[in-house]
Amino acid sequence: MFDKHAFVCYNGGMISEERLRILTESAKYDVSCSSSGSARKNAGGMGNGYVAGCCHSFTPDGRCISLLKILMSNDCAFDCKYCMSRRSSDVPRASASPEEICELVIDFYKRNYIEGLFLSSAVHVSPNHTMEQLLLTVKKLRTEYGFHGYIHLKGIPKADPMLAFEAAKYADRMSYNIELPSERSLKLLAPQKSRESLLAPMRALSERRTAFKEEKRRGYFLPAGQTTQMIVGASPEPDGQILRLSQALYRANGLKRVYFSSYIPVVRDSLLPDRPAAAIREHRLYQADWLLRFYGFSAEEIAAESENLSLDVDPKCAWALKNMHLFPVEVNRAPLEVLLRVPGIGAQSAYKIMQARRYTQLTFADLKRMRVVLKRARHFITAGGKFYGEKREQMVRGLLAAGENSANAVQLSMFSEMEAARSALTGQL
Image (cartoon, rainbow, N blue to C red; front, top):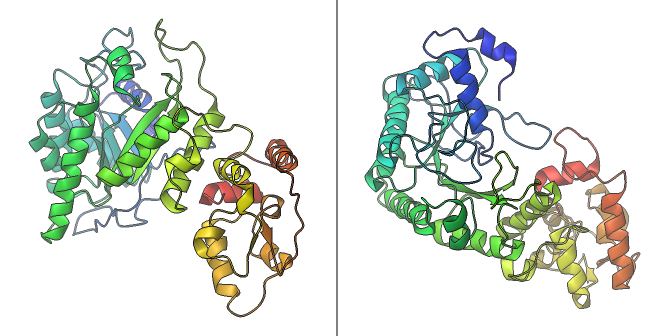
């Protein structure tokens, strides 16, 4: 996570550079690490987790590195086949005490390396022992060190629920990683875990958080909510099944985000694929997830349960191609929920269209100024009765696929200033 310079500069004395390297390297495979949505304000200490209190910095593949991302221990009692830290894996082991983590966080914060903490752990000794150590760490940071910055804490499956409830008073966000989308795959690849051992604490925290808000108690209880992660490609579940599970988690548990992580063969096992999963599949799942959360789509509309998402075109285009009978729509009359389903019109553009057409009849030139992606949208809209697209489904599919594969269509880059990249960053589809 941090470069060599950061390791060399740290001389707090409590945790060695080698242990620090092991514990941060072991944490890098967890992608459910982003900071936002917390209402925690500074109350006389240091740091601020309020809204934009955590500065964000990104790697080219979109992962947030503004938090100190570290495991308390990688010495695991579980033996999940896909995990680098699994019990049977021959890797260097290290652990850190709550005091060492606290000192590290404060030292790095004062050096302006970080604005918050993402703290996870392998199941060291037992679930309860590990959760107790995690709880002690975040409690010390808040009460003894006066740290009010953002904290994302990973919950430990099968630990006492009361430990999780207590930790939720000090963390801004918690997450229990589902990892594998089905009970069958969990039994095969993560035999110490079960679907219920992961879902039950998520439900309990959601219910407790709702009650906390309704009773208007003083203090905080997971102000930034919960997230989870699923590994894509380690097991055979299709995208349709993964999206249905994501949808159920959003609806039943009020999750803030489901993260997807392309499988990487960090350990070898006869039950696991030898090759990493295609990054484009992860990208398509994120696009579909955006449609679930912000565009009014259901998982059933995006893909059949036994289907994978198209790799040629994004999920919104794929849906539109299956429903060509609904298009074209007139942008000067179509309701918001219809505009949101037009490929190339993102949420921001849809609201701009709704506002602007109150005063004038919009043309294609107006839409271009609003940064509507007309290369996609022109096949599905009219503006003032004019249509500049292609009506044949196969031809439209070919043009959309060619646009994505051309040199001008960047899949996802945090540094590109091209229009396609800007759309990807804001979720405009």
